[in-house]
Length: 304
Image 1 (cartoon, rainbow, N blue to C red):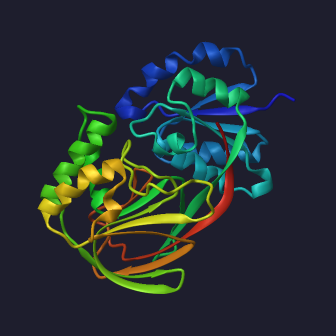
Image 2 (image 1 turned 90 degrees about the horizontal axis):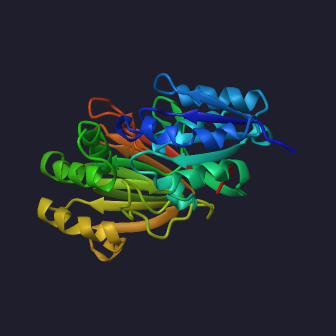
């Protein structure tokens, strides 16, 4: 049976370089007349296009972009009942591509494009977030509070780098400019915890930022979410931790706490800067102080 496929293409991915990359895929797509190109025109458009495709009975919705494009597409797919949810294809042409790497999608874009038509499906969990105002959103790879959210925010201002180098330079800027702990009351599966938090990252996959192994034990199909918490520490110690996070060996340091959960609630004494899958959920000028996060096991099927 031939699957109906919608290819949601973000030409702004990889700092606007995705358009050149995608042109190399045209010949592959032309061999599959059941595939439909659907370019995005504004932020959240990929969510709308994915939800529309699901309602119209498409069997596959593919995200051609980075983690942000996948994030939007996943939110569109999660807006329909599970029995009507299309398969998710990914062609990683963004800056980080962390979720696709965790799912085993090849980095070679022609190969990834072919898998949209021939790949086998693999289950993945997602995370569901609800803030204090009742706003709901899903994430496929990671949610970052504090330090790594500021890294994401600074990365938007950097136009001359891409991939891992982009995020590393943003990390250095964040240590120098935004090293401020936030007192938080956190409940992990019913267990209370109070910490002064520099960084709290909730992970479905092991890496973010193009390769930082924030939660090295995380797997997107293990039925739980993982967390990496860094308590109050000096700037100098934060610089010391960065190469450890790159290798996934930071858990051996005293200011770091790693673990898993199914449900998390937190209240912060100060406004939180938050990113989800590299997209800003709460900017530094927002006033978000409460979050509830839970895992949704086996939420989507990914072609890999």
